Image (cartoon, rainbow, N blue to C red; front, side, top):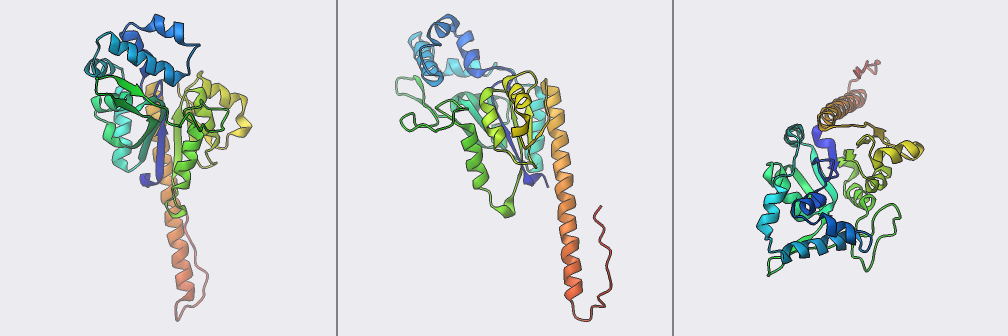
Length: 274
């Protein structure tokens, strides 16, 4: 019954141990310039400017790839991702990073193909070999959510995913995140869903301060060992629960059929629901 489970990960400081943008800037020696420009530009525009600076310094796309391949990703996360995928869970990433960074890192660790969808800011390689980042949402017609940055409303993404799933294909959702922009998608989760905030990070604090607004069950984590363990336990829990529901439904259907069958004695039947 793991096929009834949809797991959505944030990327930076959730799926991976670092912030991928800052990792590149630090390793390319651009930390000082970043802080000088930080208050003058939106995040996407700032990162695009940093990539221009990297290009002007003579660094290539290959140099950036090699830098990203050094980003640490805990072995337990690799293991639980592969296990969840093998069990039939649907895995997605929703991130304010960018497609090039995410793909490079996940491919390096051999888990890119475990994910059915990567929803993030697109990136292209220009003819001159320079990476360009573009916002997920068109900045000329931004979303109206005041909880999210103008380039990406994660809550809107969750609503789009939910609306694309028919009632007969209903999935239980597990959302794993850490940041301020993970609170909006948390509010879109139903009572049968789960949210896994990283302890003592902005999402965790927002949930604590607004607990009545959150319908999903909360399972916090503080390190990647805990994240992997809790995620595996939730997959087992949901799978067992769905299996019981399916078995019960089949038994009830059998009772209904027997009661309507020719020659039925109409004697009471006992239904075992486990």
